[in-house]
Image (cartoon, rainbow, N blue to C red; front, top):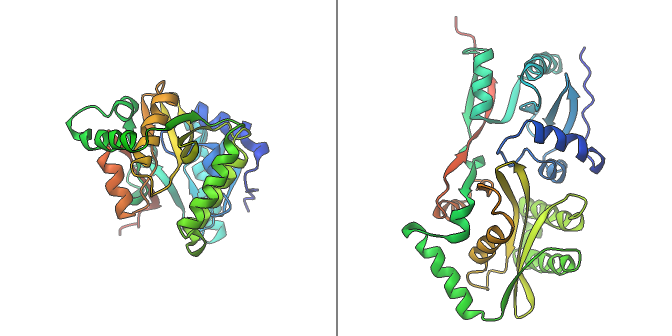
Length: 302
């Protein structure tokens, strides 16, 4: 029997996991320590080192694994081990969050043996940072109007980078946002709010980058993110008060302009199938989506 010691990631694992993510980069928003660490409890995720690769396992729907992180020759050996491990545990072999590049590699090693079902709801939206900062061009004309209106209505506005001096104000704003948006009654909303509050509490330890927006001295929006690869920054969290018209477009634009211009791309994560969110994310004209799917073995045909 194969024994693999999966355990939930802790802050002590940050250096190890980040070193693997940096050495074998992906533009997928899941491939960061922050994402893995903050969501591990909700999605029942554990990790283990197998054949010199990092393997994440989820027990949310039985047993499934993220595509291993490591050198390709080690990844192939790991997949062999995971297939045998799944068989011994009595589950069909399944991998989640598999990108098109991952599947192409799999297909090269095991031609025709696996199938992938992409989940549109989990595809990440990736934008050019220059476009998000300048909002240039006819297609983003509406966004520029929102920002101009915001500036007209709120003459006393300002943008600041998040620091230890102002982060408590973001925390208090998030608590108020939670009350106003009925998070307690919605399990997923509540989980996201817990992740948001934990991100702020561990802002320095997690080495996040953030920005906030003030109107009349009061914090009305903030956003948090981190580098996911050399050319891509991922925005994990963005919160704004709904009654402040234009606050969402404004924090989005200001944050990219001030903190993200050294990156070519901005990953603003998925829409989870929410119609309003999908419409909003598409309206910013992504340059591409990072498609992710679930991989299973093909049924043997007689």
